[in-house]
Image (cartoon, rainbow, N blue to C red; front, side):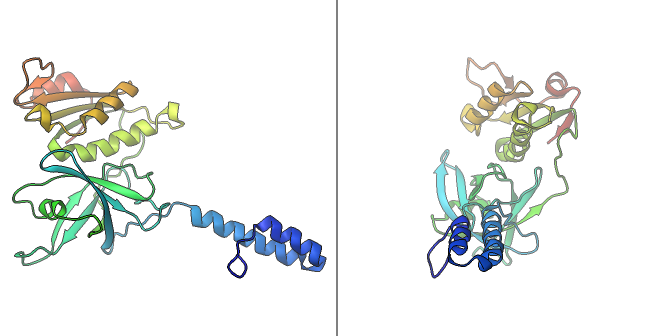
Amino acid sequence: MVNGVYIPSSLLVVGTYIVKQEWLPFAVGVAALLSGWKILSNKPRKVLNSEQYQDFKLTEKTLISHNVAIYRFGLPRPTDILGLPIGQHISLAANIEGQPKEIVRSYTPISSDTQPGYFDLLVKAYPQGNISKYLNELKVGDVMKVKGPKGAMVYTPNMSRHIGMIAGGTGITPMLQIIRAIIRNRPRNGGNDTTIIDLIFANVNPDDILLQEQLDQLEKEDDGFHVYYVLNHPPPSWSGGVGFVTPDMIKVRASSASLLT
């Protein structure tokens, strides 16, 4: 960039050679600096700060049901990533009218940490849920205070040969984060993770099963991932589990697994 005009580094060197050869070493050095700056400026930058809250703008809100939505928050730059280790979560904070102090709750994004430019949260709004109600009332362009990473666990590839997961409702979000990370790191994708995953996902009604389409697609694509749905009130043609998750269900579906709940 010279006087506001972008000049490719190679052209800068050639032009310098034509004008005055003794300037060539200087031009080569400048070109190297410019190239290095361009590479660094395009490198994904982790934006999370575990010490202080930052404001992230709501860019999109997608309703999944009458009380469940996916909230998309933009990152400062299109190439930025959140910087959240697999297995950890973020804290959301808000000053809510009628509450004596700032309210803080933890959430796990459903978007991959390799996704640049934004992160997605799947949240169910509860009548007495301070942060979930606050999120539900946000408009596109409003901001949310976020801090992280948080949590004691960090998933590493092949930390267990077989993982069993038990989730209910929106409790699927931290499980999905790990499931996607494992599948993304399979040998067929250039990784080395061969962990077997068995998920038992419990809900009340069929309409309560969140992200079922995504889970079914992952199971279809990956031989090492299996999902078993359990419903309290199943339809007549239901072939999954019925009632509550029982020890027998766990024994059949994940008998040799390290359990995550």
